[in-house]
Amino acid sequence: MRNLRALFEREGCSRDDWTFISDRMRGVDLAVHENFPRATRRCCAQHLYMNCKNGGWSGELFHKLFWIAANAYNPFVYNKAIEKITEFDPNATKYLDTCTEQWSRHQFDPAVCCDHNTTNYVESFNALTKPYRDLPLLSLFEAIREWSMERIGVRFDKAANMEPNHLTDYAKHEIELRSAESRFCYSTACGGGEFEVKDGNVKFPVNLHNRTCGCGVCQGSGMPCKHGLRVIYNQRLDPVDFVSTYFKGAAYKQAYAEHMHPMADPTQWPGSTLPTIKPPGIKRGAGRPQKQRRRGAMEARKRKRHTSVKCSKCKEMGQNARTCKSGAGTSKAPPK
Image (tube, rainbow, N blue to C red; front, side, top):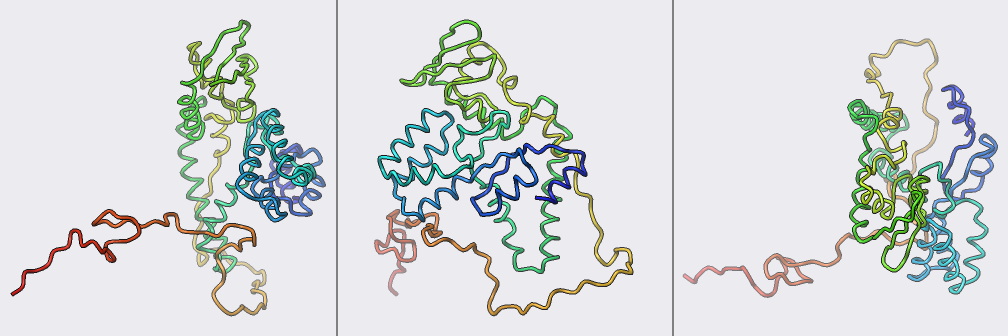
């Protein structure tokens, strides 16, 4: 965290109100607030759920209620889910109350315009490093550098051709999904830029001037929800004008304004008079280095995506073409 703060200062950034998301590892909170006093801490909901599972609170009902509370964009849905969890086990609610970090989406600052409550994108990066984990340290860093250089290079070229007001691919996808859901909503104008949108049997107040909705999705995600889109389309307006600038081409250009330059082979590096750093004298353990992540005792084991087998000949379940017993599609040669 000290190095991260020094890097920010070297780039001319002196802000200390960042938002960090991690698990509840001890020492993280102290390290963050020591270097960034006004920082906001988010707790990964998946790690929090695994802690609850290790504490004995599991099952289909608790799993459903927990994620309803974690993904709730407004206090009403959150409180309803917490009430159900309290009926399930009051001790589970007491444990969740001890979590001082933000883990439910309704707690997030609307100015951040980010509704991530898990560290899945970090786990995705970890999964990409799996083929290189058993390499020496320098080779591991070189593999990560090449992967990062290729990925950032593609986005650098893409950002160069984007218009400042164009939406990113993620924002386009979200707007398309929410637009399809908005077809089942009905809006009523109330005057002064306020509308009442009916979604099934539930009504939500929408304010176009403040870009707010009673469901809380607009404020938490930085993009119009399905209720807001219903109003926008009825008023013949453009949804792009109601999307946060973080999801437009101007911000995308700033994020990928620089790219990683190519580097020559180590044999072509300039000479140096510094002493050669030798690897530490650590004895390598027996066996092949482990690549798979160690799963917890209460964590579900990884299984095959499809457990059922379907025969391509007789189309029956539970057998394949080699073990087919019906003999469909097989031809026997006539006796001589």
